[in-house]
Image (cartoon, rainbow, N blue to C red; front, side):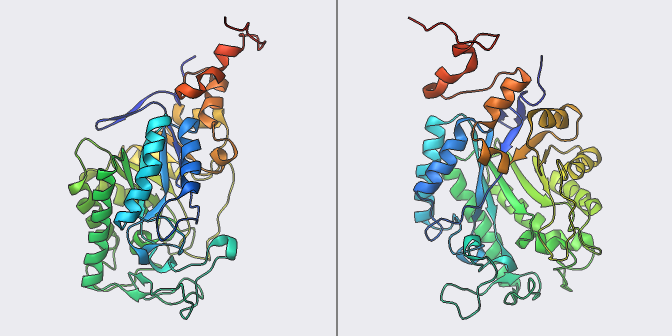
Length: 371
């Protein structure tokens, strides 16, 4: 039996052994943006057998771009050194290729850690900072952001570029920019949060301009043989918001700039969203973008079962699947999916003895001990 899920995928000079990615999952435990032992444990275990590509949680390009004071960053030498320790471990002992998601939270920054209740920090809180956005429109009752002027736009772009250069020094295989879930680049593309009257506001082609400029600037300093992609929320799930048709338009523009894949998610921008959640509920967005653009796409959203993931790839709905909660529950998800689909997948040398064919017979019985 040949598995589509466990077939290789080539992007530029990178070959992924399978079509399974570990989605970025915020942990809210960094120290001034720096990874620590939690990240070593979290990413280290996932690098062993959760998927062929492991992407870090949202890794912010500036202190003010963090969602919370405990979010991961890549804006200082200390951040870079701390993340290097984690990625070096994953590279040495794991089997996954390594990606970093670069992000800026925009108006959804300066937030309480979710385990502390979440929500925007009051402006007078000692850990709070002034947020920025395309327009001075608050997220619900959170403090209002300052609209980015020319200098602010230039700084954001420069911060993304500087973090991209840090990724190169770290030997990262893949970069994904974050333009989803209501964060800064998503705030630019949606008419609900972008009400500018300059070249970055108004019609779709203007609203996508700044994210495309950021992507182009990052792509220019990223090695030509390494892939770079982007996560996009394909729908705001709010009347009058960003649409899948606009996502297709943006994807065409990204393709022209050398984008290698789009990671298609949805929502996160507006509290009025009404989302119909269920198994594979976001897959149709990825399918629509792939069909209209030919871009390599990644599907996300309640993908939990091996056969479900296999069918998504086999049916041409997406080129990859990305899992979060499923691999938190089972950090060896790819191993178990391969067993279900009768496919081959990589094991770290230290764990090779647990590969089923080495200790069980085809009938599921215990194999004879080796002498």
